[in-house]
Length: 465
Image (cartoon, rainbow, N blue to C red; front, side, top):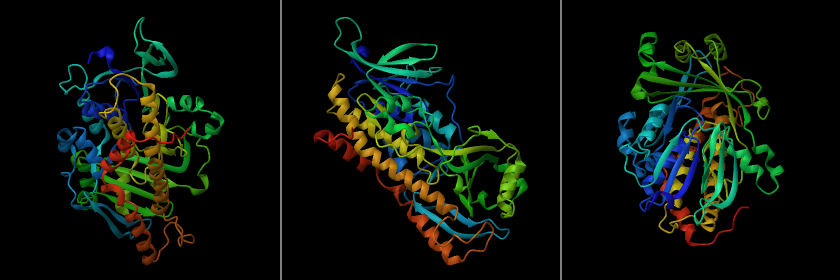
């Protein structure tokens, strides 16, 4: 199919979710129906954060879209469904910390540095001259900051039947047109408020326009394994795949990345009484080590040894979005953190966004899809996307919130206990048996969701709006 006859898809945001959609659509588009334009506001592609968990459920998606061979050398173990330890759970808000239990799951969790993951996705983009197999054509546009979009149905050129229903307006860049707009521009999405304000009764959606603070802050840092070995040679993280240090109102997640070269540390301080209040500080700030250490005064020494190795920790508010009930309308569809940003306590945010991209790509490239743009087709596709992805994302977000409470010992029976208190062992055992079950979804099969979604292409459904 010639370039001008392809259905033109614009993706706003070249983070993990936007890149995954482009790679997935190219993998599934055997009939060469689509042309992708990927727009990124930044002048270069870079990924914020350090580690990411790839659960067996997410790995199955990455295999299907052709990412297996490029990712395997970057992982901490070969992907399989052997039962593996994900975390050792330790009660650590006391000097004599102790092991509570192990979280053991089929396939465990694959850990990878976000930057490595992003680079691998970029290598699989079907860009001109990239060497990647090209089904859907793709162009990447850096330094393109979207400020607005307008919906029209004006032909792209005189005498052409190929419509340009959406015009994208960028800061200091010429406007461009597309048939379909996909937003993958993160929790601070530009597209989300524009999209919501175009819905019927936009006042209903005012509380979804901006992120909300969860009441938690996270201290983050990377520790060089070699430095930790010098400072604390018998540290258990040198032999374990992951540790979660828990205590009242705080918990710390620790695991190796980059083949064990670094240890990723994320320490969460949950102030329950501040949940839902406004965060007035910067979105991230470098803090001194003393502040980080003071938050974990009295905790077991092996945790504090990790903090001593982080010379320049950063502090972040943990924000999320209220549970939005619509992800798509007509020709505009939102994915990932742009529409369902969630707290990180189940390690599910990136995976849920990757699933959005996978399901949408499968719907786009389904054999029943038209060879040229059709307004009725994209409406049906958006209705299906809302039907299958909205309840799933809301459920994952709620589960992540619940997990955060459990990880910080905010649960029935724990009300009277303060940081550092001795807690009856049976209470801890019962609590973390619930935590274990809350991760039962990690090895389920995403292909089932894909079959359900594509199955709706053959039956009428009731749209959400």
